[in-house]
Image (tube, rainbow, N blue to C red; front, side, top):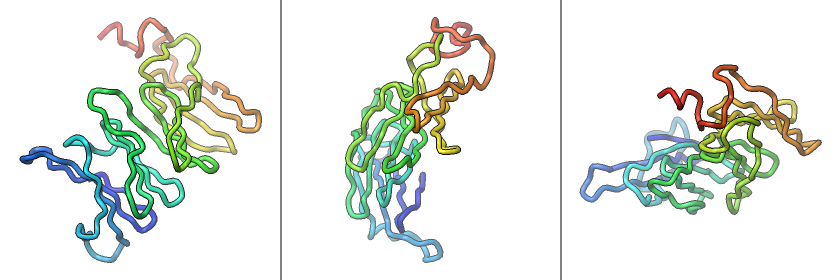
Length: 198
């Protein structure tokens, strides 16, 4: 499940969470559209830490395919081998959302910081304050859910207050574009809108 195709390789998860013993694997299989089924005997596979791991996001930087799991694991396949960029950790919030190529690196939306992570092909680094926090709201449990390039600028959408930020690379500064909805009013007394009425 959760198939991703790039550079002549089909990457996907296989789960046997109810088995005895239970297990999960991430496979990379050489494959081309129109050339029949997938031959698992050719798979380069990574045994995952937890049964039931599945995809949260996927992307690529050059020929390297990057997959993140629902349990915070981050895995890279370079065409020959898998590497674990970050091991999964059950019970620890670390979710990766959109992946976007930006110059010679990949930017990855992160929860719970609401910041971007940066992958340069070797390691993942946290870009603190990328983007900033809108004044008047909590800096906790934030998701940098969406990323895109437009007109040479980087745009990032951040949940839960629907913030839209623009990074001007020429000026090397973040600019707040707008909040994408205007109700309820912002507050830093709760992390999420309507949290105090649930």
